[in-house]
Image (cartoon, rainbow, N blue to C red):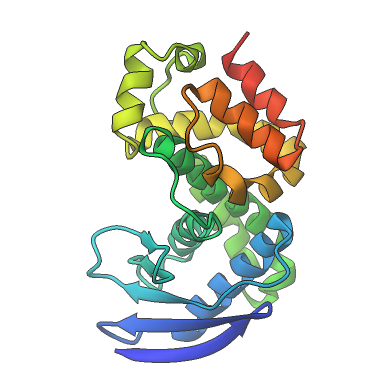
Amino acid sequence: MSNIYSNFSGTDVTCTFTPYEPDTFMQMRLVNAVTTIMKKYFCIPSLESFEIIFDIKHDTPETFKQIRKIYIPALDVYWCQIIFQYAHEFCHLLIPEPISNHFRWFEEAICDLSSLFFLQVMAEKWISIFPEHANFQNSIIKYISNLTTGIPFPLESLSDTNSDIYSYLSNECYNRDLNRFFALQMLPIFSNHPILWTAVPQLCDGADSSSFLEYLQCWKHNTNQHYIDEIISKIYH
């Protein structure tokens, strides 16, 4: 196990590599680039220190907010996977408090959206950030095109607290296929209005909402982001 202390865009970060030392230099450059970009989109000038643990034996990517640790199990040679996993988990870390269990699926979907959105941003900026690896830009584009589109479901079913899909997601936040489909429906909205990322840290507000509509309206009220109306209109016609 090795620890490397660094500073990512004004944030103290510890990178731990276990159980072996891979290409630590490139891994750190990748997460540094994603950290810098995401802090800009989220409009976060400073952030409390945290630790990124690269551990191929950790079953899944995972974030522990209270102790500020992010686990990334992707191998060092899988650069796209590192970006994908880290953008998801860093998004979790930027939401400071837990979200009510029945809306946890929405946090997971937004973090999946973060992976999709910031993979695209990294593809656009890749040559300027990593000119010596310019050809890899095509690999990111191909990786994005090969991602699953998830399992479709009628978004309006989320407007009915008694619907099967609403009940299921309220109890199961880790259905990646449903989360991916929802994330892809949100992608055009966030692409057209990237300022919405500044509202994501406040997803933890509105914990006592009795319905998804009330939750979204509370999120809009707390952040004053009227583009959330476009999310609402996708579900509530």
